[in-house]
Length: 572
Image (cartoon, rainbow, N blue to C red; front, top):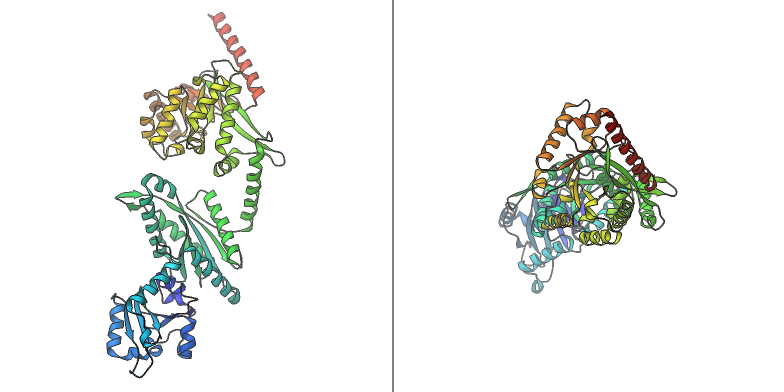
């Protein structure tokens, strides 16, 4: 498709998208703005009409037949929203047959010319079917946006053009945040409706020089050319994020999602389409890693981080077999000073890198589907260790959302505690509210089954996520764990004091025990004891320790407890 230097100034986004699909067609196609000035045209038209076909030429210069008042009237009718029509463009009956399908686009009209013999002319229905087939071959059926095939072709075309002109083209990869949750909870019909509405918002946000594509699933892409970069791409990304975080109304239900966007520029980040797509994907990954709902522009350091992550991913698959994964145990104290159990904490000691934080490797394990296998090992190892402690002590094990939603959790737990010989009431599972975000019957069934087995359930990091009180109403948790975020400044911040005091009162009113995490100072411990917090956990009381150290810690704590009792008896 030949265009003038700023074709986007004349065609809307949807018009330009339709025009772009015909780039390599052998059809004689042209597009005109509302003043009937030429904006887009195929090479075939230029080869037939010659120099008259130039950007900005009037429609009657290209097709003199439109000087006829009747044909001009038909043109005006289509421009005002009338149905497509096929017109005979011959100036006289002696000329060869020349007809054209005239159809409306958002900011003007399009023409597909036919120069077939008189006895072989296509009917209006055939012309319209031809247009439809061209559209279907290059457009996504659900959203109406151009499809992945057209995206790849168009990206390579614009990259070829900018390589010659020394301009920049921007590629924005867009991923809808939380789409899966909507699809799973409201159904695929709602998911399809959401994709259509999101596509409409993306389209409406674009300005001249941009075209949108449905890349795959809930992933979209925008190609932006002919703009000042990087400023225009960053402005567009911000506008898209704002547009997509506004709630959608589906079946009278407000639905909230968001968007993460990766930006890359050609040819700086890739002179070929595959290179530029990879760069935008890496930037999109960085946006998701940084909390989603944001845009990130590709830089080389992102590539290094991704390569490091890939190396970790490969290493993690072999870590358990190589004995690199191990557990540490942090004691839990019941006020004033008695040890009631330990929390098992997963650790990874890489042979080359050293200790790797759980916040780094656990998301990798979850994303790669390894967490179910690793979680089973953690549970079995922790239960075996607990059998070496006094029978009054409990062991707490963290459950990841991936484990909880695996479908085989309850069977695995029952098998492990039977095989190890640990009483069920000595095992406590800690879950976060992210596990409960999809409030399905299966979730509640899993929790109730674990409860029936006699296993204690603790709601971890309470107060830092959604903290929906419906969780507490729908399931009888044994423990609430107050996140260390509220404990850090407990000595000086009145808001933190009020929140912690309220959580303790709420939990006790529901018959639920309370544990405070991250206790680091004596004054924090005293304040929590005074307010009636049941259990304390933190480095002040005991740092995470290995299995042997945990056994020694239990032994020392038992002697201390006996010594304290004897001192009290003597005092009496």
